[in-house]
Image 1 (cartoon, rainbow, N blue to C red):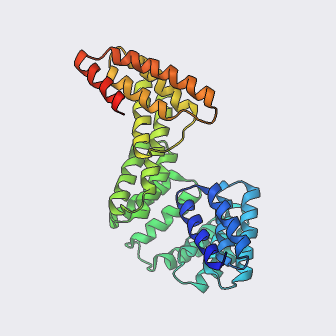
Image 2: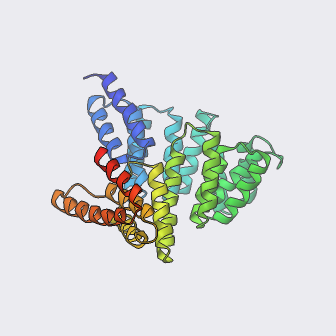
Image 3: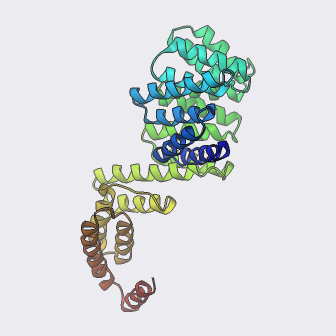
Length: 331
């Protein structure tokens, strides 16, 4: 095994990170570190991945990993930036500011550092200094620049003032309707506000502008599951099941907990008499959510759902019933 093998594992871990498979990403990074303990990028990604958990212990562990990357590579601009973000999450504003200043000094393209420096200054009550940093980030003093509104939106978003964030992202998009990041972040803010349908529309726009970014599809499916939960709590079981199906159609291999499977079964039973086609669809998707770990339990669940599905098929018109049975035999 060689350094090249370690780099291959690092690339694999980066792909897993993008796919949000953080646990497996860490496995690959641990192996890469064993093979080549002197590659700073491995520790950078270990720190970045650990911190996705967002609990204090993991954030501190992430800082340690990234600090090790910086020790190995003192001019590692991205590492200073990432560590600054982690210090910011811990509320260690002075350490965060120091890292952001170092990051942008080493790499002027990391101008987003100014956004977080502005956020820190606002938190300290230094409004004028915050504005200076925003102007540095946007590249212009004029409020006609879309970046000015975008970065203010980002500050409000980071401070969890989602109403204000939506307002500023909207202003940014009025000036630049092709700003993918603004659609993305506005969708996240709208999701936090419970405005799910609007969030989906923003993600669809973002995907239209950047179709190679598959993450937007995953985000849409996540929102559909949130809508399903909300509808179920309101007692609209059929519509809740519809949204679960929509989410699973987008993210085909997703694993959901029993809560969603049970909604599909309940909705299927409810729809059997009035809309057997819909009931069959719900049962088909419920079958996909069975946990196969306990084989005996899984087999019993499958039999139960298949019996419910057979009952729904029996409610179909004769011709459809025959076609469905032939389809099942074929598949």
